[in-house]
Image 1 (cartoon, helix red, strand yellow):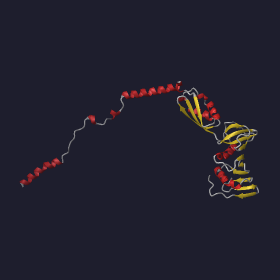
Image 2: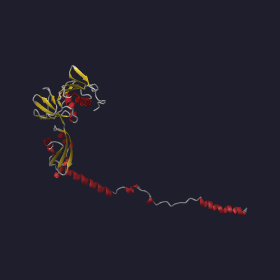
Image 3: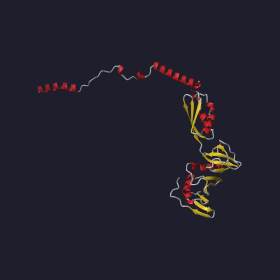
Image 4: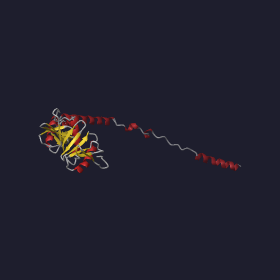
Length: 286
């Protein structure tokens, strides 16, 4: 028994040693993560402020001096004649600093030139103002008596023409009470006529358009083949023109008409008394 108690007594220290918790010394205050250590010093802030003020001062000086004064206006994207008109419109920019230009005002001035549809600017340091122009696309000639004007795709009147100029473009006849001014846009029936022929610049019909007749509910293109292409109104215009592109080669050069005012049921004929419905392809999508 005594031996048993002594054996148990000797095993107790071992058990206590096995369950003991090790302790570690607490770290010094300097070992902790302290956010303020990463904040810039007062000296760094002062240097940064001085650099900022210096940059602002240099920028202000450049705006007010002739270091970057405009002495050349470079125009791209249009003919030399239109480029000369653009440079004339932008003449107030000459002598001004490239850094001090009001580009929105210059854009407005450039787009007032009739043949300019859009314009964008860039500064070509040290002394060049660069402008890229998107020109208007002429689509028709307006006729009123002996006077002629050139009309662009959006309906804007972009130039006055000599009689007989631009023979490849369709003619749109105006009534004498229609006021025509270069630089302004057409409205009403005349605008509808321009809208009808504008898509033909990129995708023409098999026969060129000679003239455009427009009424309140009727729009007719007189083709040089002798065929009258009746479009009705300007709704579904792209579909109607696509149907006409597919059918006109079948009609040849026989004078008559092709009515696509209802594109699903086109009708062709040589006179008002001879009408034939024309079969089209399965799809009439443009």
